[in-house]
Structure formats: C-alpha cells, structure tokens
Length: 96
Image (cartoon, rainbow, N blue to C red; front, side, top):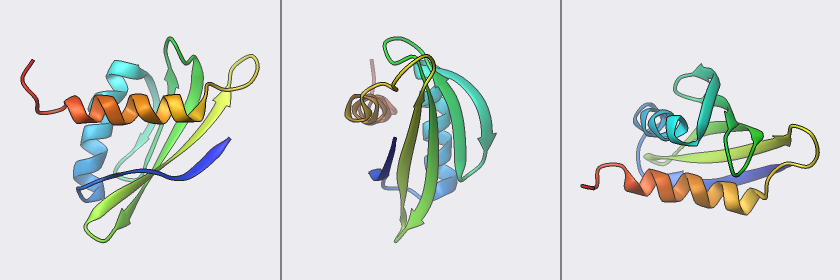
C-alpha cells in the first residue's frame, strides 16, 4: 500500500529527516536510513509492519510519503500509521 504526500513537515529534508529519525525510535526499529531522503523501519505494536518513508523537498518544506507492507498478512491501516507519525512528530520540542 502506498500513499503519496502523506504529510508535510515545515522544514527542509535534512532537518525533517532528523525529526523523523527521532520519532522512528519511538515507533519501532530502523532498518535503513539514507539521510535525508529515505528511512525504512519495522513498526512495533500496535502496527507490526514494514514502513518506508520517502522525504521530498517541497517549497521550503518536506513532503513525506509512506509505504507499508504487512509481515504476515495485510499491513496496518495507513491512516492510523500516518496519524501516529504526525502525532509523535508534533510532540517534538514540547515540554513533558
């Protein structure tokens, strides 16, 4: 399953990649990181699937596209995975 232009980060790819890399440690295990344009990982519970993020420059920001693949069946719901990424990225820089 592939979703083009899943979400946008208001930062250039190098800075956006750093944010995505931090959040990836909260959501699962990184398999491949090729800064600043590609990140592949295994998402942990509750998603349990392979996830690829492609970062593309977009007028001073970065558009992030998601690709998911299931491990032993269909992948997790794409909207739920995207929402988890966005929610966790929004936590960066906020006091706890």
